[in-house]
Structures are given as structure tokens and as C-alpha cells.
Length: 269
Length: 351
Image (cartoon, rainbow over the protein chains, first blue to last red):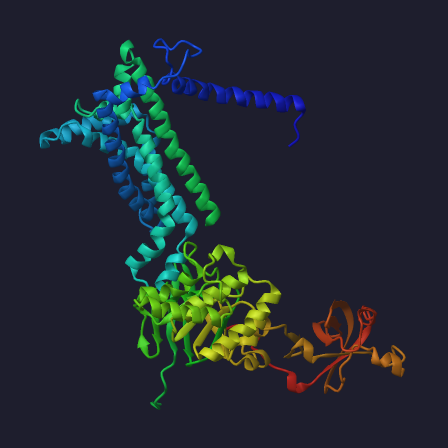
């Protein structure tokens, strides 16, 4: 396609503007987390690590980070098991309702978080309360797992479809039983897809707020919830900035690694 | 009736396989002898690959039995059968290097590390891939991957080696080299080879015996000479080479001599040498007109319309003729001749 120089310039400008709208505010957060001026005057009068050490000393913030990490790991572990199994079922077997299962598994990621949140909250009240299980970390993990499953499922399914069954046939042909085939052939070829899916899943869980609001009890305050509830307290503003900066880094890095992993796997396979 | 027979390497009885409404294999009986190079030849969809996959154990037969070395394996999983397969797409493990690919069968059968390394290296040597052990499959050429697949199967010393169009992905030159190599390896190892191909020349070149398949059935089993010179059915006659129907009989193109009509061209000695002709001594003759001349380097194809209305193809070696000589004959009146000994009969329609 040939574009006139003017069109090319215009398109470049629009793209630059679009990216700026997204990334400049993020950059401001990162800079403010080390801004020496308490009122975040611009440009920064100087840089300081005071807010970071203050945030590290903040009991509530530390708790919240820990809770978020636990929730992310728990939801990812649950999603790894369920998502992988579902992907195998859909990719390798033919059964009644296969297409429906495929849709139903993916749907939660499209569902508005508030709907998932309210529905899960109601269900937990009805089903878990009588069993003596209240809202807490466990319910957050289950709530997050509903959409974390999707990332694992999609990654594994794509990999299974791309590699096909010929490698597994070759393995069986060479004398490997079903377990050996999984251990030596299927799993190694799946590993990077699992890691990519798990990183995405962790990142999704780590910054989730809506479903969390409805499924977390008073004892399970995740980082995004803590930030949200401290957002409008002026004396906590520097700490919020630091945590926001930390969240950015923690969310971006896994996604970046996940992307590199899927890209790498494509060129190798 | 009950003379004791040595157990065949592969014995198949009334083998059937249906996929939904499609009958891919419709009743196949085969006896493949120990140490034989046996080919299954047929067009795509003839069921040859399905038969192979049932021997390997990847597909469960709808009906029928498969015996390997006298043992019924019909219900056994692939890993419980003493056969190995060379796949069309090689199916090398991309995450393992060449040596580990070759070692794989020994590893899962718990052969000690030192022993299996030694055997794998020897297998790689036997396919002339020494020193390639550390490479990944992705770093190899097509021909090298082919040989790794072969080594990976042969290292297990199976009773029967199944080959599913193993040369299909190679270019012509490499394919011909690998054909020679395959035959040599088979002779050296003394393993029964069951070779699936749609290339009739490949099947005729390599095999001790050939089974020609069409639409899930075996049309004929025989030596390459039998299948080529005495095809049992019209399908075999047409699929294994070209056949010409003249009157009630069939004749292969290379058995037909083409001679310019006596008197049509002056037959002086010099020009005589440049005529596209064989001995012309056949005891059967027909007159016709050359409709098309296809020059193909070593040989020329003459498409001749006979006076009877039939169209035949005659293949003449370009022993002393050039492309200029043969091209002159387009539209010429010719006399074709052949030997009655080279005629064969095939049933008109399939039953």
C-alpha cells in the first residue's frame, strides 16, 4: 500500500497521540512515586526513595500485597489444572456438547466482572455459608479462577491444535506407554504454553478489583482493593503512588515474558 | 490343506475400517513374509495408509484380525507391538536433539544409558549421520530428518518396519538416492519393510512384492513384474503405468514400435538411422496418424490415432533420434507394431 507523505505523517501522529494517552499517565505515576515534593508538584523538585520505604513499612500495604500474591498463585494453580484438562478434552476427544463446552469455558472472560461478582457472591452465600465457609481468600481465589481458566485453556488449546497428535503417536509407536508419552513428549511441548498462560493468569488476578470486591471478605484485602480504599486519604497518597507503580511493573513484566514465550515457541515449533 | 506354514511377519484377515459412513478399508487379506520388502501402492483414499495405521495400532479395525509373527495383536496398543513406523512428516520430537530422538525408544524401554547411547550412535552411523547427534530436528535438511526418522525406528530392531510415504516430501534427486539407501538398509538389517506409496515407479523399484489397492480393496498382489506385465484388473493396468487398449487386448506404450509408413518417406540409409523406431519386427500391426509428439529427453511419447478410432500412446527411446527428428512426425501416417507375447488381457469392467 502506498501512502502520501501527508497521510503517513498524519497516521504516525495519531498513533503517537494514542500511545501517549495510554502511557504518559502511567509514566507520571512512576515518576511521582519518587517525586520529592509531597504535593506532587510538576516538574519534580527532586527525587526521593522516601515514599518507597514508607510504603514498605506500611503494614496494611504489605498485607495487601501478600494477599494479592496468594490469590494470584492460588487462582493460577486452580486454572492450570482445570484449563489444561478442559483443553485436552476439547482438542483430543470428540464428545457430545464439545462446542458448547468450548464456548462456556471462554465466556467468563467476556462476562462483565460485576455480573460474575454478584453471581458468585450470591452463590457463596447460599452454598458455602451453611458449610461454615465465609467470604475470604478462598472465595477470591475461586472468583479469579473463573476467568484465569480462560487464559490457560486458550494457550494450551492453541498449542495442542498446532502440534497435533503425530508426536504422541510416534512416542507410542516407539514403545512409550501413555504416562511416558505425557511426561517425555506432551508436557515438554506444552511447557511454554503453560508458563505463558500462567503468567497472564497471574497478571489478570493481581490487578482484578470488581470480582474481588464481591467475593472478598473483610479478612482478604487485595492490593487493588487496598489502593482503592486509600485513594482519597491525602496522607496515604504517596504510598498509593508507590503501590500503583509496583502494580504496573508486576503486571507488565509477566505479560511481556508471556508474549516472548509464545513468540519463541512459534518460531521453534 | 494343513501343510505347516512358517508364520508370516504380518498376516491380515478380512480387515475392515469404517469412518462414519465411509468404508476406508473394505476387507483386506495379506500375508507378508519375513524379511520381505512389501509395498502397498494405491491412489490417495485407497485405504493403504489406514491399513498401515491399523498394523501400527493407531487405528482400531472395525472388523478382522492382524497377526505379527503369528501373534494376534488386533486389540493391542501401539506400544505393545513389535513394529516401528517411519512417518510421512517424520514426527521427530522438536524439543529433543537428534541423539535423544534416536535413543527415545530404548529409553522408554529402560535400556541402560550407556548401552542405549552406544546403539543410538551406531544407528546414526548406519544412516550416515555421525556427528549430527547434538543438532535439533529444526536444524536439519529434509533428507537428514528422513534419515533420523529411519534411525529412530531401526535402533529398536523391530520385526517389521512400517513406512508411510517416507520419501514423499523429498525432491526427485534426493528421493532416488534415498530409494537406493532404503533398499540397502533393508537388505542389511533383514527387517520386513511394509512400505506405503502412491508412486508406482517407487513401488516397482523397491519391492519384492506389491499390493495394489483401490477403494479399500486389494486389486492385485504380486511381484513388480507380475503387477506390471500381467495386471489382473483394468485398475491395476491403468495405475501401474499406462496401458493401451487395442482391439480386445492391452499393450504397454514401450512395447509398441512406431514406423513411418513404407513409401511415405524415402528410406535411404542415412535417414533410416534417424527414424524413431525399434526393430519393427512385431507380429501385430495397425495403421494410424500421429496426433501428438511429446519429447521428454531420454524418450519420446507418440500419441497415435488408429484407423479403428482408438488412441494409443507409444514410448520410444531416443537412442539415435533428436528432438528435431521426432517432431517432424506430428501428423504423419505411421504403422505401429508390437509382439503378441506382450499383449495382456484385463476384464473390461470391475465386478
